[in-house]
Length: 208
Image 1 (tube, rainbow, N blue to C red):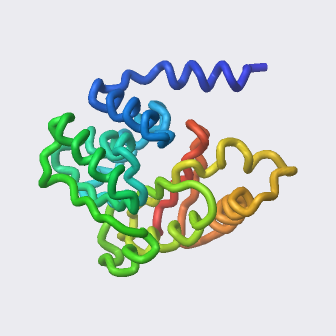
Image 2 (spheres, rainbow, N blue to C red):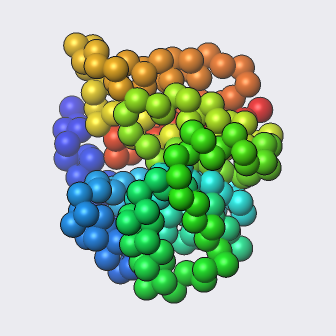
Image 3 (tube, helix red, strand yellow):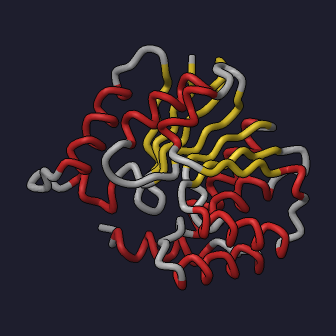
């Protein structure tokens, strides 16, 4: 039987991460922000390519590791990214400049996504990435689906809660909410749900 830990390590090491993203990863950890893994980033970049996503919304910028992966595939891609920590957002902006990303490709919005998302245009975005952890993910995902066009994709990062979702004895509020999110969308006829077991899980929802 395959060792899951070895498979995960091999998968992560398979990815060649661009230098600018490695710099953003290091900066994230120095600021106490845990970034997505290289394999998760590579998957997001591939998702942009496969779907030919031009307009993307990211909920939770952090220091922009996921943002840079999302912008990697095509110079035609434009990203709107929301972050409530203004210091993190400024650091992300500086790192975007270091990576040579044109300011016109990124729209940075400061504030709480719960307040901002209802004011955005519904049914117009190709890809919405919910880059959040803990309680509130279910509500953010519902908002994200309103923003997606028909055929668009919502990607929920950290959907397995660091592996806690798969442990029946873990019943804290955040893990319970993630289980509800996964269960609800598994049977929702308005989406096509797929769980991708990369990093700590990415749930993809195609809006039908």
